[in-house]
Length: 340
Ligand SMILES: NC(=O)c1ccc[n+]([C@@H]2O[C@H](COP(=O)([O-])OP(=O)(O)OC[C@H]3O[C@@H](n4cnc5c(N)ncnc54)[C@H](OP(=O)(O)O)[C@@H]3O)[C@@H](O)[C@H]2O)c1
Image (cartoon, rainbow, N blue to C red; front, side):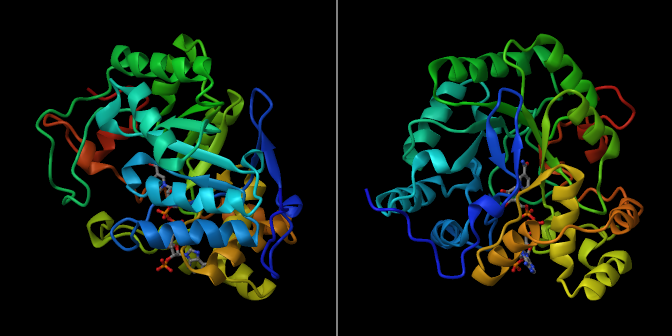
């Protein structure tokens, strides 16, 4: 088999730090997000997967609901024929909310679409079986939506465990969980989650959940690590703040001759989460990889960024609310109890 030819300006994947999961798997400490939202279609994202692999990415964060796994699967097949081995890449996918009762079938579909015979990591995307049509207004409500019911989530989790037993997925994890929900799952799981994917950026550091996740041997994977500056209007509220315009971030960036995005990503990796920034633009995704392979931030700069948490959740999840819910805060168990 021919050896994979990286791009001339590729970073050596050996320069990218990795993290060890409970169980021993090694995951690259930065991944490429693949949620094109309503801005980038499947082909643009699949092209970015190819380009990102060429510049040195080995970790891709996918999901059935991103509706591009088939195109990404074709991209991965092309990379394999060019010599990029399956074992050298890390592929995550996620079961969508409408498939909590049929996880095995949903995983089979993702495997088929991605053209893989196993996933490195499979996540329960949200802890609610509450579906919404793609692109709906945030005010729309599913009349069948329900709050978190642990017995129900556990039924979903048992199917996740079955996927591990079948060898279809090597690791399983959660996403968008809270401390009280994770406590119940950690109590009852036979196969423990090894990661929790959660929103993490300088203005939304979630220190309590982050510490809980790490203390329980899970790896935090941080989504929207740049503060999702290109998210659709419907996902914005007037209170939202902009990480890459924060004076602490911009002053560190200008002193070090970096883009503010690079500062956010360096901070993320040094803090201990795995960021999964999205971009389909070659100069951007290459720069994002370079950011985590180059000189780290100083202890002083890390401390300064620790001080700018604005508790500004961007992905509030309103569309997953059940009819009796008061507001998006109910999804996040802010007082430490599971909202009903
Ligand atoms: N588990 C979950 O529930 C969940 C939820 C949300 C996201 N995710 C995952 O996390 C990934 C990332 O989250 P996200 O897309 O919300 O936010 P993000 O990665 O914080 O922001 C992505 C946007 O930042 C801009 N950008 C990227 N690199 C840049 C650079 N070097 N310089 C300047 N701008 C740059 C791009 O804007 P332009 O396109 O305008 O250039 C890009 O669209 C998603 O793709 C998905 O895989 C998971």
